[in-house]
Length: 274
Image (cartoon, rainbow, N blue to C red):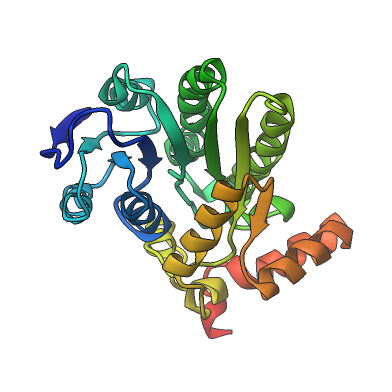
């Protein structure tokens, strides 16, 4: 992987005719679907991810028309996020879709701290760093929409996903707070909170031998469409799917110890065969 590699596609319209959307974690799953929705809605796009398949997504977007900047970088690093900011250059960002995220299964003490740090740096530090830079520009312009991908996992003490769930609790809370701070500025913040979604997340997080890893999951295209529509309306949040809404509601009222035990039953290694 080359940190900060940028590829720029040809534009089919004159510079300045189309508004700009920035989408992170766009190489697959929800992020790819969000990027396609932005392109279909007529936005030029800056897309970023740490996976080389981001180049193929860039090709898909180019076929929708407009300009695409593809940034292959590690979004857990300041340098990686700076490469996204550099790709924006002086253009005004209309949509910022902070979707990059990294999962991690198994018990906290069985993980290396390097793995733990990468989850925190991707999900929290890198996300906040990028938002801090680009949202300042949006506030100064007096307009813009931000979509932050949180998770209903942020409502639950995540046994065997303790760091991931904790990072999403931070992101969910941060989204509401930032949205309130930006009230009356012309900039809106929407928190997209999906449940288990059919993406590469579970394989990358080492969760394929768990009940949640083997469960029926939501379609990433459906999740992205609900998030995109909520962002365009300026909604504060969207929890995708009735079952996820029910789980989120139950997690708010269940004692923490019980919620942790229930999460253990879904995420403990080997639980898929029990």
